[in-house]
View 1 (cartoon, rainbow, N blue to C red):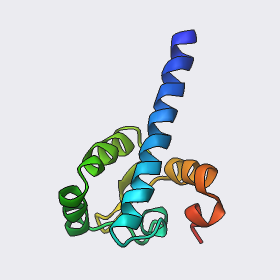
View 2: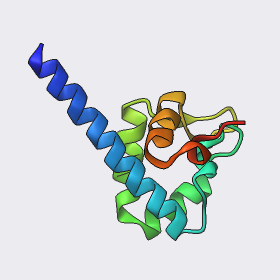
View 3: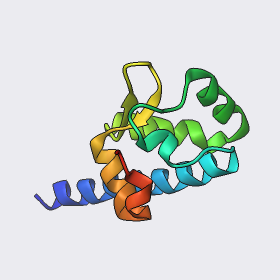
Length: 101
């Protein structure tokens, strides 16, 4: 059981690190947190490609977020956070960062 707890803690720490990096990269590239926290918005394939080109850390964080199910593609195929990802973002950055309304 202790291994499960350390694994869970490591995964959550990795997710939080990636969310912090993603937030910074979004701002650095002219986006806001709501771009990925609002399920109706999200990043298009073109925007993801541009982020991958301009920010080498983006691809790693995107993969971690998708693998851990903290991010997904919405009905329009745009990259958005899942409810779990939004909850973590809310815990880290406050209500405005994860406001889904």
